Image (cartoon, rainbow, N blue to C red):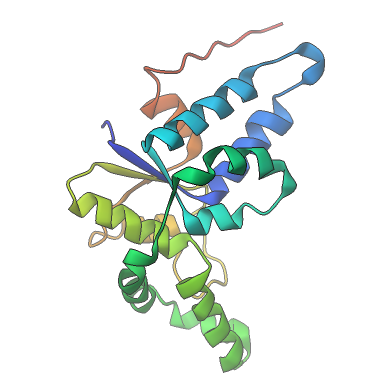
Length: 192
C-alpha cells in the first residue's frame, strides 16, 4: 500500500540517527549514506509528506539533532487541535494493572498521566494520524516502539494502532526507507 502521509515518532528519528549515522557513517571512508538519507528525510518533512508534530520536535533534545531541527523548524505541525482526542485515548488505553508499580502513589500516577496530556508525543501522534485519515489521507505512523509490555500507564503506540477501532497503520523506519520509498531510494550491498 502506498501512503499519502507519514507521521513520524521521535524514536524513529533517534534510531535513524543512531543506525544510519553512528553505525554506518564513517568519515574516514567518505561514506555519504547518512548525509543523503538525512537530506531525503528533511526534504520529505519540508514537502509535508512526512509530518513531524511539535511534541516530537520537543522530544529531540540532544545536541546531535540541532542541525536537523534547524532545517525543519518551519515545518512542524501543531498538535493542539487533537487535544480532546488525546484525552479520549488516555481513557480508552489506560492500563489499570500497571498502577501496582506506583505503590499506591496517586500523585505520581496523576503526574504521569498529565505528561501524556501535555508533553508525551505518543497519543498525539495517533490522534493526528486519525485526524488525517478522517480527512481522506492514507496515513502511516512510523515508530520504533515495541509491542512488549512495560510499566507504562498507557498502551504503547503499536498496541493502540493494532486495535480495530483505531485503524492506524504503524511500521518502523526501515519499512519507510526500504518499502514505502523503494521507488525513490536505491540501496546496494557491497561485500568486501
